[in-house]
Length: 396
Ligand code: HEC
Ligand code: HEC
Ligand code: HEC
Ligand code: HEC
Ligand code: HEC
Image 1: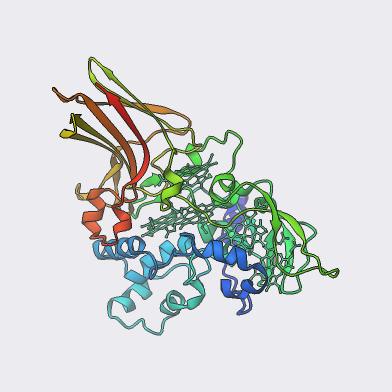
Image 2: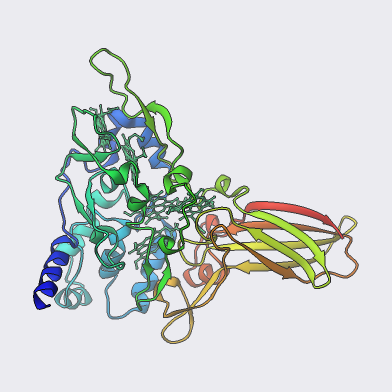
């Protein structure tokens, strides 16, 4: 029994958060441009590329807020915790009590932690050498181990990809199933088990996922299409035709992705206006990061005049240890969570307005609900923008 325990502890510590430095030749996406310029361009527009304290207002203000409210941990310690998924090529993966003492006195300027956080190697967020330098994904580890704590890296300069017959003069290549037949495994390294400082799991795309045949990459990259993986020509001067996917990783931040993402049915009944939202996608909506929101707005009209507006908000709300409204990352518990389950539907009843002869129902999505936008003082209009999913007119 003890031997098994000892072996499993050894196994865990061997697999956990091993840091492998990325050589300068491969560190940033600029180094891949010469031969993969189309891919670099697509990725550069994605939110994977913005996943860094300096490049995403929401991430930055959340990290600052957590550090302000949690007086056991310094700002740098929180940055390192979040880096596990947001910046997994960071060279320091945890801090000690000694470090906290030094940081509290602001004497940590020359520490390994400060240097790791300021290293430009992580400023590109989730870049090429996050996904393509992974050697193995350890799904035998506990669910709580995510991001950098769930993978082991290839030596610098070996790129893992979908092809077993690729040759590149710039880097070595190796085929991996998580780049080919089982890409969900790669996405779930990070898109699963988001947990607060209080140990509350506030979202988990993996447990709610109902495949139905499609993988994350089919919808958030693209279906496999004919194209080229590299612009470098072969010995006969020909481009090498391949089946490829787009690297846009388009999701919640991209307005065009929301058009038609849910089905909408509106009918009048004795109880009121019955609005049914159907979700054909394989995960709940809203989902992913906490405090995302879907809005149902009913605009009652008499002739051309608006006589009444009703709004229903589908979102999550969280309470802190002190029982105050807070952000997901400080939540002790979720007090309310309304979303449409994967491949399911929900009906909401909206009060009718006497005298109205028509209603316009608009269903839209917002990246951050009012409560959290207020708590964090988010300024960029993108966080409050309503992205329209569907609109229906009904004569009453
Ligand atoms: C000098 C040109 C060149 C540069 C620079 C280059 N590559 Fe490549 N890469 C290639 C070629 C050629 C292939 C093979 C394409 C084929 O077989 O269709 C390739 C293939 C790949 C593959 C697929 C491997 C497989 O087995 O499926 C990945 C992933 C990849 N490169 C990533 C990168 C990354 C990341 C960088 C930047 C750090 C980079 N490459 C820089 C030329 C280059
Ligand atoms: C190393 C961790 C990691 C891996 C692996 C990963 N992601 Fe992400 N992903 C993130 C993080 C962190 C964000 C949020 C970035 C931000 O908004 O600052 C994100 C954001 C996204 C978004 C939202 C983009 C938007 O516009 O709202 C999509 C879609 C997405 N990822 C798809 C995928 C898919 C598909 C895979 C698997 C091929 C994958 N991710 C693998 C960490 C990861
Ligand atoms: C979030 C993870 C992720 C990131 C970041 C990422 N890739 Fe990929 N990449 C994939 C996956 C998954 C595939 C396999 C697609 C498939 O099923 O064929 C892939 C495929 C490729 C291929 C093979 C051709 C193709 O398009 O399918 C090349 C080359 C490549 N990536 C280069 C890059 C480069 C260069 C970057 C940085 C600009 C990059 N990738 C960033 C996940 C990622
Ligand atoms: C059948 C297509 C499909 C598949 C497969 C799929 N998604 Fe989505 N996903 C969508 C649509 C549609 C939306 C809503 C519009 C948008 O945000 O892209 C969405 C939204 C999201 C969002 C934003 C959610 C929110 O409420 O803010 C994330 C993150 C995401 N998907 C990640 C994933 C991951 C990770 C996987 C694989 C486990 C996956 N998706 C599989 C279609 C799909
Ligand atoms: C388990 C991996 C993981 C860890 C650890 C993690 N995140 Fe994330 N985070 C994600 C993923 C995946 C997304 C994208 C989900 C989506 O778009 O719905 C994300 C999205 C976010 C977003 C939304 C960004 C945007 O542009 O909309 C914020 C804010 C955020 N995380 C803050 C944090 C903070 C603060 C920490 C550390 C206290 C942290 N995260 C730790 C995986 C992680």
